[in-house]
Length: 593
Image 1 (tube, rainbow, N blue to C red):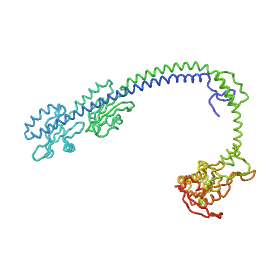
Image 2 (image 1 turned 30 degrees about the horizontal axis):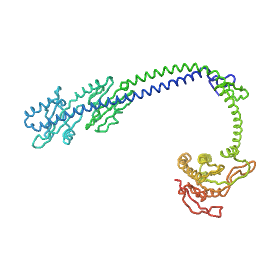
Image 3 (image 1 turned 120 degrees about the horizontal axis):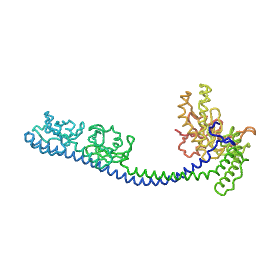
Image 4 (image 1 turned 90 degrees about the vertical axis):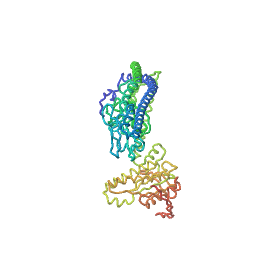
């Protein structure tokens, strides 16, 4: 055997590391002993404080998010009240343009949220600007059919269009013909954006805080710290994914959680604005939110590192003193590995644990020598017997539980015969090599099934396998085991046939016969060639049942059926005359599908 390790000059075994190896191991153990309690204490303190810091951060974010939600709601409610008031004024004074202008002036001047108003009568194709956008001299946007429909149903309608907040209110009555009229206004969100900036500066010291207000289509309305323009789709932000999974339509939802995005850990919260489906989201890096925890963790690691370094030094010194007597034990184990029993020196009469270890090693060597001699004898015996007998029988012989003399004894057993149906036509239609390969594959799995149910394969007879339960080891439930094994054999064919059809172009079907009863089991033959087998009428009946079984049918004799723990699985087929028997046998079929 090739090896890159240096060999010991006396034994040829790989040389083990000397001196430093044990010192390093002991040093590492002591360092670990010092490191574990300090680390645990640090983690315990960190865990206690983490809960408090996290709770405080959640409360802070929840309050800020709720405050932004309140600001948004109040701003829209004020705009809605002002627009409804304008709709009422238009309804009463639309016939007199001068009176209408004078009546609207105080409402428009006192409104903090409306930035431009338009009067629309769609049926008459009337669209008249009542007030332009403040400071921009721009006409307010026109309403859409969808917004007007919502205003007809609810009195007002609101939507974000191209980054602008548009609100529409139904005018109660403008003309005698009853044509519907509407007032449309742009809601000024500038003050709301300024308040977001103010909140971020007042409530958070760090520069990484992000706040955004988005509509139901995930378009940005207002933001602080987010590099996106108004009206942009915020779903492109990786931060939105962990937050948006808690959204639920227009129902009010408030959450704060920790998550990872863009390779960084964050803590953030969101809350939906009732009736609008908008969402207020706030998040900032955990490094800023939990800065106090970071400082505590760093100090704990420093203390743990100092303790580990001290323990490491102590371990190196102590390991050197302990390594010397252990080297002698290493040499003893090398001689034991070479089976050099005569080269072992008497143990050193030390009174400590190392002396006890030396005595134990020498005692172990003596026991190992005796065990190896016994193992060699058992292996030789198993090798000779295993060529002729089953594994269980070989074990019984080696343990002295079974005699090799000719003769037998009466036992209650169950017998299974499983035969390939229509094997002769199959063998004639395929090359001999393929037939042998197929039988080997079949018998290999059937044998494993027998072993799985703790049975013994008695023999292979051409394309048939014979198995027995209850011998050589007695089994109280031998009938149930035999029936279960027979059922598993057919279940195996259901899956194996697909592969055999593709590989050999054939399909295998088994006819199975099962019987239970008293039989003679033992060594049959001559002094020079014997076979452990089962003899008796129970074997003959099982073989006859197998010969009359249909493809993939399990026939069970009455004596076996009476010992079955689940008789409901058996269907009575009546009495059958079997070849070679004077009396009819009552036969049952096992329902296995």
